[in-house]
Image (cartoon, rainbow, N blue to C red; front, side, top):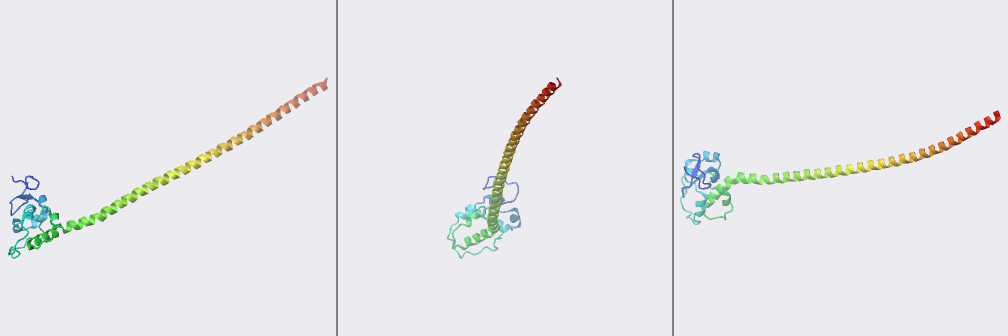
Amino acid sequence: MALCAGCNSEFTNAKYLTCSICKKCYDLECANISEEQFLRTNCESKSIWECQECRCKKPKNININTPARPQPIDTSFTFSPEANITLRRKPSKNKHDETVCSEDTSILGDTLYKGKNMEPELTLHSLSEMISLKLKENNTSIILEIKTTIQTEINKAISKLRDDIKQEMCVLSSQNEQRKTEIEKLNIQIQNLKTDTETLKK
């Protein structure tokens, strides 16, 4: 069974491309095209497909008068497993290179557009997480401050209540002592009266 020149994996089906120059085979993933693109590409376009390695080896100076191929290659078909490298090439006067670059750019258009749109989404998501985290921290701080304030006020109230109770106890204790003294005096008076009464009876 043939092996993919990109990942050295065996082909499990007939969905792969063969380079028209080096005759190496690449699976769809290494060729960087989707199954849908592969299925809708005509046989002629597949037969003239070139891998990235062969395209890089091509000389830059090619006769611009070279006659065009009889049928233009489908622009929706991806020719390179590493198409993003093509986008960073310096402009070339070669018409053939310009055609390939324009095709690669067209193919990568959706990917680049999606990539650009992903950045603000990630930024907004990160910002949302930061705000949520900050709010949680603030809520925790506020709750802790409220708990501390309530506990302080409770401690103050308990301390004042203890002081008031102690003061009341002192007052009651003093009053009790005073009542005891008065009772003792009354007992003495009663005893004296009893004595006087006994004396008078005699």
